[in-house]
Image 1: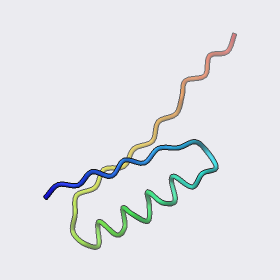
Image 2 (image 1 turned 90 degrees about the vertical axis):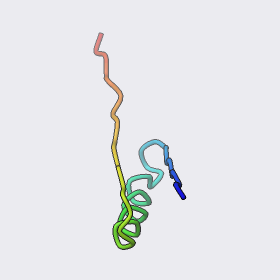
Image 3 (image 1 turned 120 degrees about the vertical axis):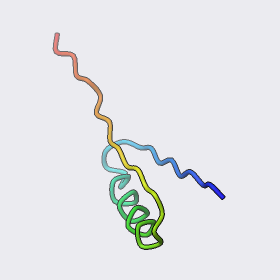
Image 4 (image 1 turned 180 degrees about the vertical axis):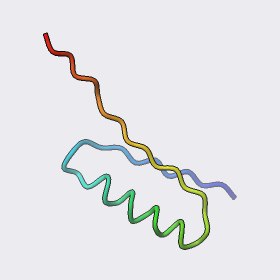
Length: 45
């Protein structure tokens, strides 16, 4: 069975914290995990 968990949010909502908790739990169960962050490009005009 394949299960995907996708989290999204903006700064201050604890997204990185919950992703870390879920990731560590997955590693404990020998599951494959992938975690990434994206940062919007700032345009200075």
